[in-house]
Image (cartoon, rainbow over all chains, first blue to last red; front, side, top):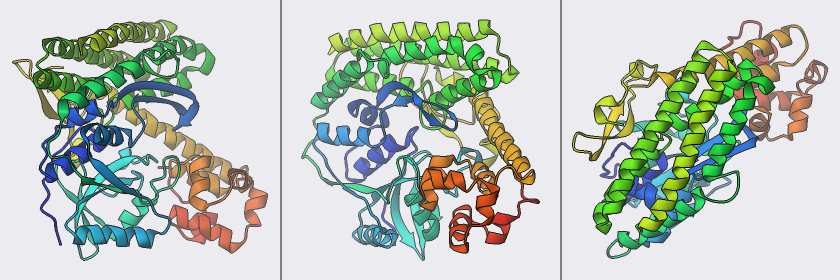
Length: 331
Length: 137
């Protein structure tokens, strides 16, 4: 059996699943709109937590938060289920498919057969939609893929019950009730306000202060960690910023697209200007990545080169600090 | 980023017909999306990360052959895991898994514990015990 489901590729999996599930129910909401209303944009640096033997850098909020905030702000109710028993998880999934209800699933990437080998790390917060089943093969709309794909029932069980940080535990979710008309205006304002607050928070772990903190640390890396580790850390920043899912520039371009769309809906010329500035900030992040790649490509650890990328990050931090103050005033 | 500037560099994704979506502005300054085959700065970062894992795996293998650690550590690195991830897959405390890295402790493990590891790594107990001909990547 197969549900008539329209697949549209997105940059990021969570936005994409939300956008595609909403379209299925007759509400056209773009990926940037989901991301902006859900206040997805962030920067965070957690040096005491290690992933792939390097500190955690993230350009977005924690998994699941975008959908929760989006749903709350536009008045959609979501049902979420987690399972201990894989058999029950499969049964509940099949029940929903039989009722013509496509569902979102949280899965681990490591055992995902259609993903390129190089991208299969133990990352457990990937999202996809299941829209049908034929003889033990599930039909999958994975938002980061260009087209729909399939997965066997044994592989699906593996990815739904991946272990480690953010273990999905079979997590399945779908919207259950909708407002008559989506009230985007209020939701956009709320989303922007929260992002401004998060990005300018007075603690060093998140926002522009965290960017500044990373810059400060980068200067010390070559001496403190040695060439190899310093380059590995730098590579981790670039990967988190540009790897599949960010749409380029650590989500800054998606956010600029959101501001442009919001400017039209709210009839606010200032947001249009700010969208342009966010694009320039995204370009600055790309320049930083390019410069950083020159360091780890040559496997060099000249302190000068590290200072140069640190300078770039500091400039970004200062610019974003001013930017989010302006954005707050603009709405 | 302008739509025309969305990088189309060679990457290992291209051969798999896997192009990701980027956001960029068109000639009129309007936001649109464009598929990208890859971008060198991140391809290099990913290649380096994979080389790092291969080096860790090769080192672990050598340590097993020198009888300094057990095959559990080798397979953990081969599967891109760390202690926390492996412990949650086998359902044991981290300190117990770490203890199983000791060759003397590993050699005394009973079959049911060995089977747990073998299942996680998708191999037989025999393959778990003998890694001489196993790959490093």
